[in-house]
Image 1 (cartoon, rainbow, N blue to C red):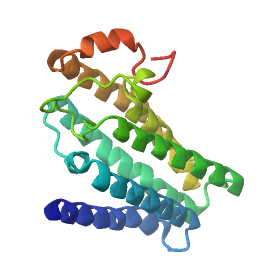
Image 2: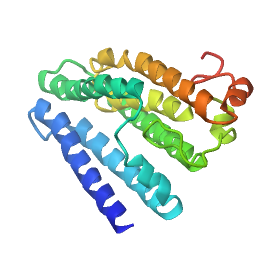
Image 3: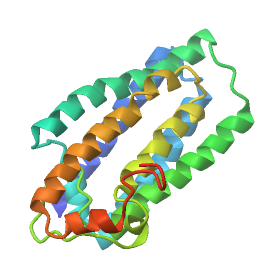
Image 4: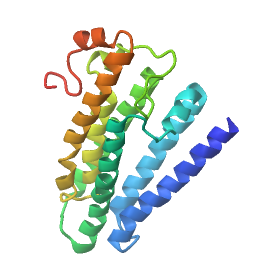
Length: 222
């Protein structure tokens, strides 16, 4: 447990430092209030998730610390998505520095509420599914989860992400950062399709689950 907490703490602090650098260096100043709004909000949300998982599901917390994909399709997903997200988070700082976007404060505040709600949904998924590892794999003793949010769509965590990341760009006050964001749905579709191939092949009962819950990501759409 001590090693786990140390690992979480190191990754948590390093993640904050890296994210702050990606946001504020392009802005050329620390006087970027949207950046502070995002960082402080996410700091609170992630801290709450950490405290909850540490107390109620430390095994899932350990799984969420894993970052190395095993499937070649998912390794490709990481190789493409990582630089894309770096670009997405660099743009708001540049946008602020050069004054490209002029987003009303009301829109930013509304987006912050949406971002918080989508993260809460993300946490609910982890509460309902102790197998929600960051890495795509079949775990020992894993069972199909078909209740709660999983009774609505087969991948509610990705649905939460689909709302979380676009709303983040509004929190950061940048319309232009939404341009590279158009690639996110395609990446999620790619990840989901290959993840489901593995689940159908190796997780007992998943094929039957796909017949029970028809929609992968968006209800009544796909």
